[in-house]
Length: 621
Image (cartoon, rainbow, N blue to C red; front, side, top):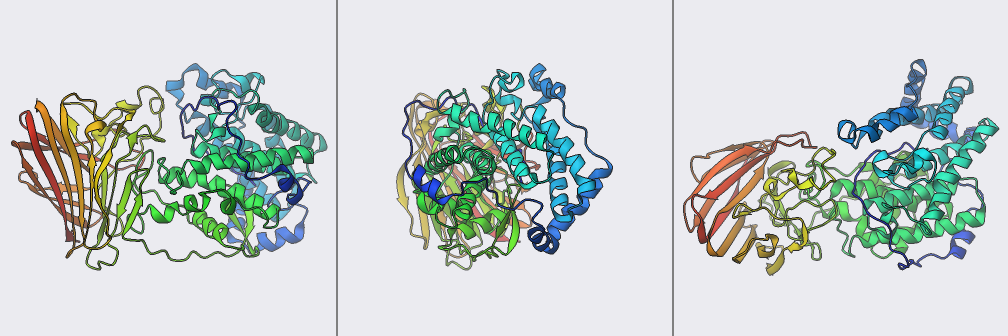
């Protein structure tokens, strides 16, 4: 059963290109011959008491939800109304892009609990009337987030845009109708099926003929959107009471178009959207893969068939700097962690032959029978390089006395969930001592996905550990990019990468601007970041180091940075003129709920050429 994931994450993707290539990895014949012709879902109807007694009675998690469900019956939430839904259109800035989440999430959460409580207890008298009343509400209210239905198609029932929330809601209701079909009022069941057909099934067919603006995710333009929307639609189609031929045709399109999502990893398993959005989007890809795999009895496995899917699924193992911390590039949280459930699912689906189910597990709100799938311990390599993305992670490897790792990036400033951060870096000592940080995402607001996005100091280059040239920040542009001019990656004593950042700034007169990253594993290790610059005439030059925690020693050039009990010495060397240093808090609404600070290192006078070198050296705890 589906509990909608309310993560509104994205921009305006436009319309899909007409006459674009249709992927042909799976054929309709293959899908029709290997998938059930009748509606199918991960778990059987509530009336299959042998199943629910076996799995529900043995699960402490389901028993806990059941107890909570009985508590909800004593005080049911008020049903959202169309009038409340319409408030967003009256004042977007006042209500915010998360208004729909705040309005509907509690209602969804309670309904999910009631469904679990009913399946486990089979207490029809207590649960079924309340569930049916809630389902009637869903038939009357829009499922689409107002922010992605500017023309109010769904409100007027003139059309139903397919986006994150509407597709997740469709999966939710389709699975509910399947599980409760034997006990639902017949007219309510038929009404639910009509709404699912109208808002999801027919809308998916319409998308390929007359796409709405914002549905470009179908061709992969939406990154995680492509996986989330297609994952939801896949579940909705499988469980819906529709013609089998129609279902097979549309499921084939779902499976094939997930190739667009995987193609966003560029064949090397990296997503520029960041760790959080990998967990979100790929979780839905895994959901779709699990459905195809289980419904076809192992004959259809997306991970094994779609080129690059295995590499994309290994992303959480490759992106970590330490055992706990990944770089918070793009709209990510600083302490982002991949859900253990998602990691278990990765391991389960990467097996050659997934083992027989022995328990119910939870993935994106769905309860799915799976095998016990313990994760193998993965030893992080000394070097991870994403060549196309220009992202590097350097770790101690075999150097037992080195306790810190680093990540840095080049790339360009028009990536998925882009931040203007060419040349940014992260330093992590121990398990979670973040010495230099990428500040990650802000709390989403009306500005985040508007033309004012880069007014935010978390998203523009001022809030990253990169230079400011002649008072100018990095621009948002595909042409603002880095180039690799030197690279020595051995994974042994020393690794070095030098980036040309001259095109990362649209400032006339830059003759040379490079940033060298040197990571040494000798002794306890060092990490040096060296900026070398030359201009046609003297210009202002400033660089920065963004950090958490405590910084001391500002009066000199030997500083100490401390976070989570971990300390590193920071020495600063420069040539070309005198510098001054200052610190400030980046006062934005940080999604990670921490204070983020910026150490500025600025030449007192304009200079024509010079260098600035920051050297990080471990100090222990």
